[in-house]
Image 1: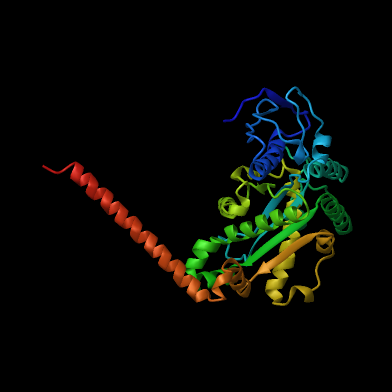
Image 2: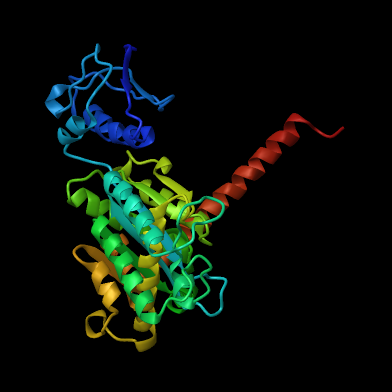
Amino acid sequence: MVRIVPLRLRIPNQVDPKCLYRLFNVWIHKCNKRSKSVDRVILSEPKNGELRLTDYLSTQYGISFSRESLFFCLADFKSAMTSRVLDAYFDASGKTSSKGDKLITLNGCLSTPEKWREFDIAWQTALQSFGFAPDPPTGRYVFHTTDFHSGYFKLKPDGLSKANERSIYRDLVMIVRAHSLFLVGFAISLKDYRKFANEYPSITKFCFGKPGTFVSVLASGKCMDWAGAKGYSKSISMTFDRGDEFWGEMYNGFCAYIRTPANEHLTTENLREGNKADFSPLQAADIVAWEARQYFSRLVDLKILVSGHRTRYEFEMLKRPSSFFTLFEYADLKRRVNEVFPDANGDIVGIENSLRQAAEERQHKLIMRRQRRNESKQNENPIE
């Protein structure tokens, strides 16, 4: 039986209560799972800038609270933790509805909340110093990479030479790189994806989903795995650009990824959408998405290996020191199936047949259940 104890933790104004809520939940999950001697701990949703615990955590896990304490030092608390929560910001490129698009890509930046706050200050200051006009609805400075390179960016300073544009852009790229711990980019060739879907419809439907879902699962998983490998919490927060066409597919992909025993402590609350004006890190993801698209498009057009092709200088700047970018084509999709079903020994046709048969059996059971329900209703209400 859980005891409710009157312990409240007052949060400083500069700290996001929801971020701290996620941070607590990671350790509460570990304490509840690993220890039989410690009372189970329940954490309520943050309200009015406060977090309320229904019990205290054991000091053997490096966390110490007394029931009389009303304040705590966030820095001391985080230094005692072995895991910290990271924030990832993603931006997509390409549309399945556009006949001219050959690729669907999802790219993002991963860093700590503190670094993202520093990034926002540096980003807004840089855009202002370069002479950009603020966004009228919000009053904040916004950078759109595609519009900047195309010359149709209304907020861009007038009269910039090509050399000045290149200098400004590289300075912005350096700001992104300086505040990002990890960059990620996944791309899928739509031609190859459609070919694979026609040959293996059941695998595509039940394992991959739509192209947007496929790349979102890969990007989410890669960021979580990288965070866990570097000693951070895998329960990262993810923010996607609200303007992306397949936002729903991203959400479904994220839900599919966390429905595994290894990620049972993750929730869909880790996923949210936003716009570039309110979230400056989405502008960083926009730059990564634009550069990655140039890189992936050349791979598709030239049909050459990643290691054998020259990339843009700005893209090379972004890739250092830690990043992961990859393009999925037809052979890569088959390889992915073998990773998902290692016991099948590469028998993709057998996997397809098994999934199709299982789907048909589920459909048959559903039809029979509906028939029994209808017959039961008819027996209860016979027609006179």
